[in-house]
Each structure stands twice: as C-alpha cells, then as structure tokens.
Image (cartoon, rainbow, N blue to C red; front, side):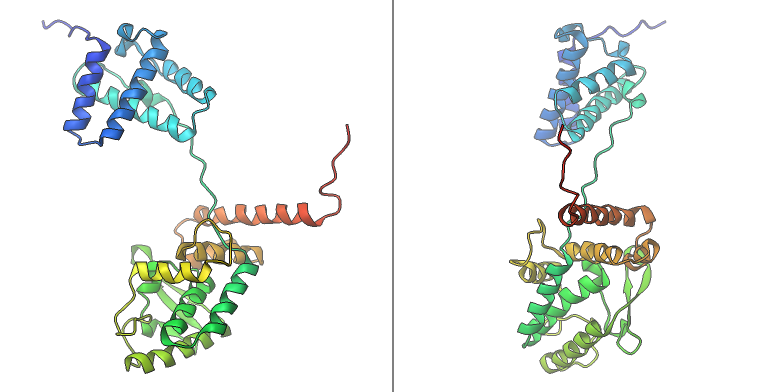
Length: 313
C-alpha cells in the first residue's frame, strides 16, 4: 500500500503553485505577484507568523473566515478581500489536483458582495440646456445629425450599438415609433414624441442633400453615406455634453441612464421603463429607483425649512 505523500515546506508549495499559474495558466506577472502576497498573508495569519508551520490539509473554513474578518478590520476593501479569497481558492484547487490536499476550505466561505455603483446620469435641467444648445447651433448636415444623436439617445434610452444599427425603415414618423434590435437579437418598439419627430424629419432632409440617398439602409450615416462607428458616436456625445454638466462620465450610456432616471422621476411605471430599455430583468431597472430616491432626499434636504434643523443636545 502506497504511503501518504510527505508534506512539503510552504515556500516550496507556493513556489510550485506560482510557477504553475505563471507558466501553465499564463496569468500576468502582476496577478502572480498578488496571489503570492495573498497566500503568504494567509499562511502568516494562520501560523502566527511562522509560515514554515503551515499545514494546508488542516485548514478549515473557520480559519478562512477569521482571516477574512481580520482583513476587513485592517481596512481592506470588499474587492481586495474577494481577490485574496480567489487566490486562496485557486491555491487549494491546485493542491487537490496534485494530491496535497483533499478539500478546499474556501468553498464554504461566502465572499462579501460588492457594492454596485449607481449609474452616472445628467440632471434634467442640464439635458434641457444641452439639447437647446444643439438645436440652436444646427445648420450643416453633420451638426444636424449630431444634435439628433444626442436627442435620440436621451429621449429613447437606446444603447450606442442600437443607435448605430438602427435601420432607416425602422424609424416611422407617422406612427411616432422606432424599432431597435437589442441584445440577444431581441426587437423592441420605442415610441417618441413631436420634438424627436421634427428633428428626424429635418435630419432626413439634410441627409438627402448631403448623400443623395432618400432611403439608405442605415438611419444614421456619415457624409459619404457610410454608417457610423462606435468612437464617432462617443466623440459626438462627449462634445455635446462637455461644459454643461459635472457628470463624471460623458458617454452614450450616460444618456441612457439619464433617460431612465428622468422617466422614473416623472412618474413612469418601473415595468414600462424596463420594456423601453430592453432589460431582461426588472432588477436591472430597479437600480434607477435608488437614483430617484437619492434625488428626492437631496431635494427634501435643500427645500424643506425643517430638514436642515438639528436638535440641540
């Protein structure tokens, strides 16, 4: 009967593991270095600073939880803690594959959930200023088109890729609706009002003069008749928003977030906004309710005469 494989010093085990993820898994030098520091941190914590005494098979889920608690107490972010847990879990999977451990103690430890940042959006008053500025300055084909890009993104909530892929035949000014092809090739219909209808009509007139095509395949085109590309749309939006808002991100997706936020702030039903955005899950749309509530809190704090008063102790 074959005897039990003798234990190996921790430094040897970790060197073997780091060599494996560097040479076999082709992980970056930075990742390899981070994994090494995470594992040495864990071994030092478990053994009280005596890494040579580290015995991988004897580690329990409780040991891992104590380490996680210690990392948190030392001010490490949730993301840092999750990354270190991931390193430890990878190490144990390696040990199991090489018959140096029989179980992964990290499997029983639930990592802390990361806080999802709220989407960046532009206030309604700022959007009014941006759209009015674009409309007043429009004259050439490209200026008319660029103003319509911003207006359409904000008033429909469509994604950048959906705007680029929008077909001319899918934009119906008579019915006041357009069809977009979203993620997973799912088509949805988005209604629009008189302002966007008039802007579309003006753009089509300028497009015909610039390209000579009355009904091109793509709705949005360049002066040579070719369709738009992602970085062009990014530049158009950034140029339109710059100087009008303090939002941290100036992108087409920021206009999508602004559309959803303003819809909910003005009384739209959450399910209706979900359908307009093309979200698969209502939970994805619900993040905008947090933004709306944050605005409500700020408005209350600044407007109500008793909101800023504090009780004197």
